[in-house]
Image (cartoon, rainbow, N blue to C red):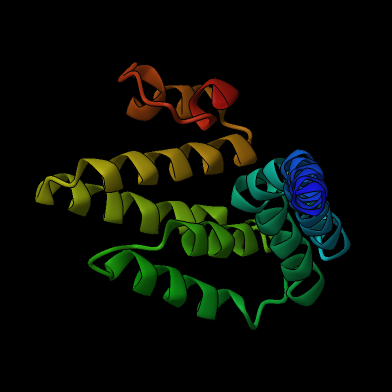
Amino acid sequence: MENSAKKMNSENKYRTIAVTVTPFIILGGICIGLGWRYVSRAWNRKPKPKLARSMSFSALHGGKLAFERLVDYHNYGGKSTNIDADIKKLEELLADEHPRFKEIQRVLARLEMSRKEDEAMEVLNKALEKARKQGKPHEVYELEILLAELYIYKGDVQQALNCKCLVEDGGDSDARRPLYK
């Protein structure tokens, strides 16, 4: 009997130790696994892009068009051989069903550089009247803004202020309107 009592006592002793230590081993394994996961992610982490918001804003309105104007100025510089081609290109762009106003603005800038803004204004006025007859309010607004830009470039500020796009306050969120006023 004494042997069986010692045997039971030693089994209870190991069982008590196992029951006490098992949760610590499980929790330790979980902590090591989570720590390894965090460290491996930190090693493989890609750097965050810096100034993503301001870069996208400048790409929308700021830098690209200005850079293209500088390139156009360097390439064309008022050469008379390009003027007729630019006027034809302007007429083609305005004749499209859905005009690309950034491209129109770029062609107008080239015509401004070559001092042919009067011819560009005639073409724009014709396209403006055509858009009014067809009842396209967005095209009318954009063409009037481009016409106001040409008037301002030419130095006829009073004529620019008489444009409907600057006179009427439609509550648009166009940033050009207060700038031109």
